[in-house]
Image (cartoon, rainbow, N blue to C red; front, side):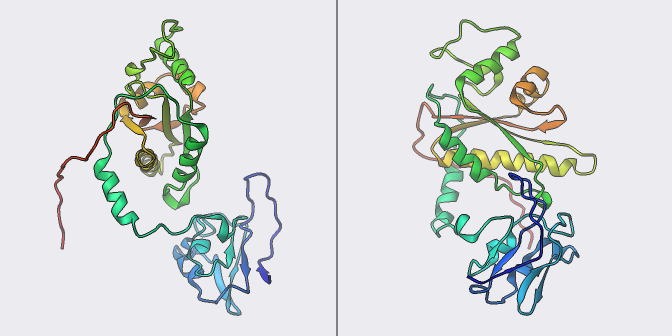
Length: 284
């Protein structure tokens, strides 16, 4: 396999990347230039990718900035032949385009999902939660900013400890058969999903938008897996005001929480969606 590799020095330590590590497989590249055309850094006036001798070339691999590499992997995703790898990721390692049935399935799911307030005691397997988190990590962020974080409660035991911190004392009467966290406004959900991010004076609105998007993505995804969900803004206020809970959840005090998603196996199964209408202003 012939590779055209931009000059760089690799400083890859774990997941910390200091260079883009942009590579082109000459045997696959057809010189279409799509990667250059869709590069966000190029679109905002940067000089990130250019065509040289019929092939794409990375100009400055260490420039991760607004007019540099956004780490978005658009170049990898757009390539028709899978000729590009970047950030140590190859085309055969990423997801393929969804089937056409998604245009029918996704609207149905959006119409079918319900808020759940009755959960089974059974916990969701850790590997299934991990699988959902890997998917929701692709939620869009402004400028592909990587400051968004997720905190997830995996066990009822952890939920019980959060409840005890909220009450200010050990709740000895609560056991696996009687756990009820309704005062946390997530009812008896055995798991929590919390998206959070540090606010900055300049980009507060953007951070809040990203938090809400991640919450919506996860909530819909959990329903796609057949789980019940409940979104609570009250819980976010409750958790944010308790330093001990924030410490236990490893959420920095300067991070904003907008919503909390309680999720788990639903006790009851809905059989159909409902009919809802919204005011829609059509501008033509």
